[in-house]
Amino acid sequence: MLNNVLQTIGLLGGIAGAVLVAGPTPRQRAAGFATWIAGNGAWVAFAALTGSLYLGAQFGVFLLLSGVGLRTNLKELRESKLALERQMNQKVLVNDLARLEEMTTDTNLLIHIARIRKRAENGFYHLQAGTIRNPVTGSEYPVMRRRIGRTDLVEK
Image (cartoon, rainbow, N blue to C red; front, side, top):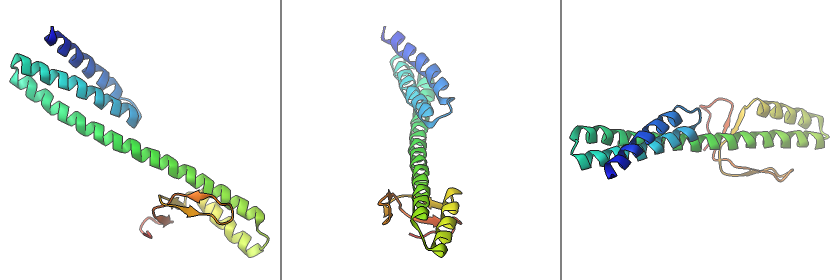
């Protein structure tokens, strides 16, 4: 009875994991690797109960690789969330610069702000974590370091 349950879990975990790992998003791939962990664990348990050394070794290695795949995709998922937050913060920066342009009466300052806003719209300023506060609008930007233009010019 237990052998049949373990084989069923292993079979379904293997098939469902393969379908999920083929998915386009890190979240789907992570779910696939988690499913493989369950399925491969069931096959290792089945191999231990039946004394199948080679089957146990094979699925033991698959179990370890599934753990690595899960960790990799969870890291990618966290990084994609950070990239989305950074993109949203870039939009806030552009909007704040546009509002600042509207409030500026000095022509030289207006030209300078407009130039900075255009660069920000094109992704020239990359905000990465910590906090910068805009004194005019009150908006806060999370920033760890600021990269301006080229990636080899980094302030810490």
